[in-house]
Length: 223
Ligand code: SAH
Image 1: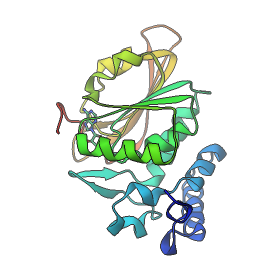
Image 2 (image 1 turned 180 degrees about the vertical axis):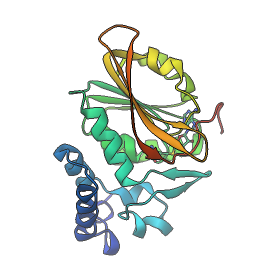
Image 3 (image 1 turned 90 degrees about the horizontal axis):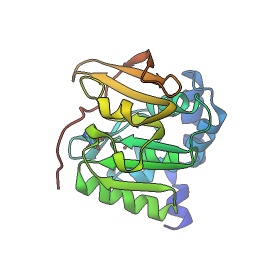
Image 4 (image 1 turned 135 degrees about the horizontal axis):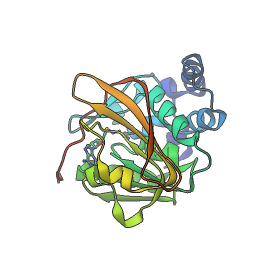
């Protein structure tokens, strides 16, 4: 990828990006590292060209296969909550999608493991990680309803698709004092919830953050 592609032109100018950052601050995002990484990350390369001029609007945008690239505010909020538990060595993301949330995370934690159930989306996301030279991401085609046992335990887990109830496997794969950030609910209404494991016990502290709207967590793979 050349520097013009990465910097963006026209609607994807630095000024447009700065406006997005100001909007996130106005909405209560206060983590400077999170704001800095969002400012530096080109969101337009995670979209098809026809939509790239809308990349710095604070809205969710379609990425094909009935899936969406999450709204920047939600990406910022979930990332900020994850980081609030202290430095994270290893994070699991369920729902790679475009790879945008993965890319933000990878710049703030030791390493990211991410799983996606739709093969063409995973393929495109991997290509973006390669172009951005992100070397601390491990991505796989897999049904994340069961987490990813192979690399467990995780200091943090983030789910970007909504199940109806918390998957037990995700709680089980949390390291001591690990944190899970997950939207839970049906297609109409979901709560963003946070589970914090109490030390190395099987006890979890649970908190509801706010109402959100994510695509549903689905089972099985799609090639
Ligand atoms: N984090 C993404 C958001 C994509 S939308 C981004 O920044 O672009 C959520 C994604 O979760 C979709 O790509 C969807 O295919 C995926 N998904 C849904 N259920 C899944 C499951 N059980 N396992 C893995 N991925 C899943």
